[in-house]
Length: 376
Ligand code: MRU
Image 1 (cartoon, rainbow, N blue to C red):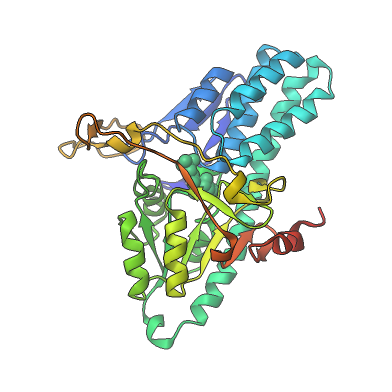
Image 2 (cartoon, rainbow, N blue to C red):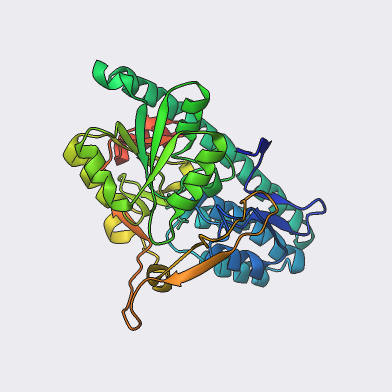
């Protein structure tokens, strides 16, 4: 997607394959800076600290992390250790396990001398397939938006099609296009009048910082709202559809996504607003039949609740590529108050209107998923 007229992906390999580069998402939207990662420890740290984040991008980063580890030591023992180190970085998004298993299972069958090169090829393939899947999600989602728009009562058609999204499921969360934002980009590029309500998404504010950054750079009309405003807007008829991403979807269609997603689904249900979840196949966990009971929920540092990061209001930094911003963190809570920070929640399938995948749109149920994925 575009930043100042240049098309970017979120991750790439240095010319001689000795390191990867990523966009440091902890500095956005105020500073656009690439970071080089040249070994397993650096990749693991980048995932853990959310320099890279978003389920699909975490998976691709993990795959390249295995490539870097195998360049240092291609033995079975080193591979197993690298696999475990990367898998432990973020427990909820299943794309990480999926991508790590793809690379590990491929290279285990090869002589040690061929492993690093094979891991590189597989990681590249995972990245390219992620782009293709996200673009296809965009095409299916666009058709859905067009149907919804055409079905709106005539008095509503005066206004842009109003979509609400939570967290960041845009191109920064993937390799390109995004999941939930892909239909929005497709709709905007197709000339549809669309406006996005962007949940700020406390505590780390991926909506206010990353989704708003993406939409602004693509020129998509949007407004950032506090997380608590969505229900009110739905009651007032100002939301035509909600669309979010997911970090893990169980085979029965339960959806685990950024904390606060469940409350949006409840509000949508109460107000008759359709609630869609966009996902690539890599986000489906076929081994789990009950998302609520079985998906591990990552608990992150309480400091993300008690403190908040931003650019100093007095700063004159422009946010342009290459410029440096005065980014700092301030404390919100009294000394001594504890914080609790579950990073994800599970929305039961019954609250999900439909799943939008790279293979089409399906009911959020085992039958719905199997209707798309029974054959490979
Ligand atoms: O904690 P994060 O920022 O990695 O969480 C990201 C989300 O919850 C996204 O909405 C989800 O990964 C879907 S991304 C395409």
